[in-house]
Image (tube, rainbow, N blue to C red; front, top):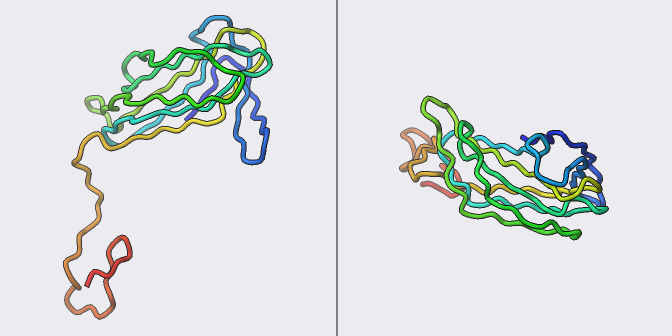
Length: 168
């Protein structure tokens, strides 16, 4: 899920296949009511291996970016990055971000990423790509796939495993 809070947006493709979202209305300093919120959910604990952002500034837009992260939706966000924004597309890679844990009594784990561009009231901040890479937070994951050991009694057709290999 994504929400642009307190700013104006315009999806403005610059080339075929481009998904850039131009946003304006930022301020000279980070403001709590001007941000992009991105969130994700999982049915169990997940480790956030990395978050990758591709972004830039346009037409004398914001010169700085602040990134905050909540690994548990019931806690406060933690600042994980603050740095300059270039006029050219730049890829920001944030790694080893921790584990999303399920709060007591919850049915899902979740994270929330807050992006705040600042340093100018003019121009645009352009977000082109967000990739979140996660892995299971523990090794005890059930897939629900039953392991076959040979052909069931009375069956004549060939048996294959989940990858399409013969299981005879």
